[in-house]
Length: 223
Image (cartoon, rainbow, N blue to C red; front, top):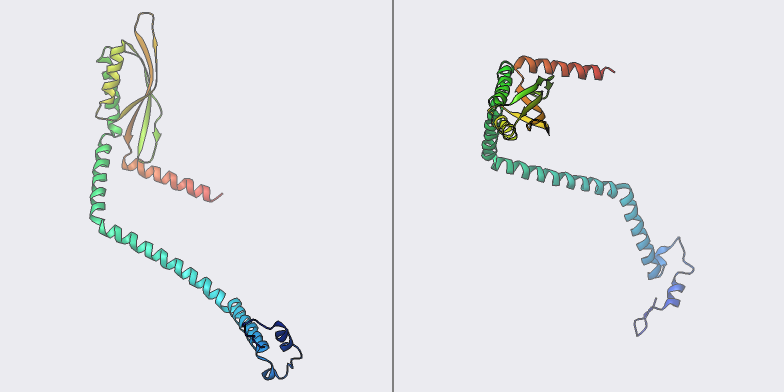
């Protein structure tokens, strides 16, 4: 292969170099064929190494890099928790305090009769007439039970409003919902409502609830 004065490749000479090559004596080949064969062999070796070895190593390396990044993020998260540990403890104590205060607003089973009497007295104390005061069936939740009470009361508008305020201001939690008010012939109003009050479950009831849930899971798993 020869280069001219203008450094242009002599393709005719290059083609001539690849003719009549003796495969048994590659050492006697011109420079261009030897370089071409070297490049082909190099590419082939690299391709084989990639296919049989480097590819798996690259996948493992990528996996390890992902694990390293996850470990770094876990470390940063734990570091933040460690730095803010005292603040989290204070928040937890405040949550426990607030939860305890809310729990005290829920009567226990023995106090429910007294609470129902207080609701009834709140209406009578405002000069209202109870046409219906009917406690319903308790619904058991996580750690408490709620009791719906169907209420029908007759009286003046101002007294009905004051009664609702009295119920909302009770030390125990009582809510009024499904309100429906209609006028009567004598000028008074009749209010239909559902009062819902709550109580916390005692230890015996919680234990019974856990047993029922356990039995339900066992029955479900046996199907």
